[in-house]
Amino acid sequence: MQNLVERMVILAEGDRLGMADLPVNLFSMDQLKQEKSKEVVEKAEIPQATFTRKSLQNIERMEIEAALRRNGWVQVRAARELGLTERQIGYRIKKYGLNRYESFR
Image (cartoon, rainbow, N blue to C red):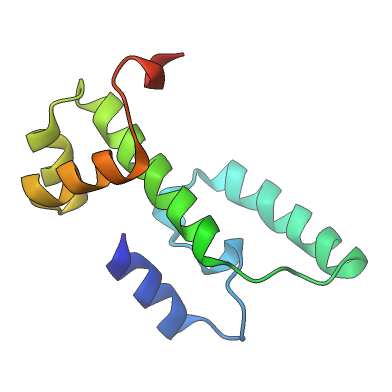
């Protein structure tokens, strides 16, 4: 996750990160087209907000939770998928207060 954000910052054309700066393989093409069209409308109406530390933490939390769900909450597999060690994913689960049973609500 950290590498992804660093890569996005380095490759971004402007001062701010937007949906267009995300790698294409994170979204299906239809979803990306919809987001780009929304982004054009938002830019015309309201100044674009910058990413904040909190929003990056929310993204990380959602990605970790999604990986855990995809792997049946087997931390070793989810960590491997995300490129983390077992210790790192355990730390993040504790940091974000993720719970196996609450994630399926």
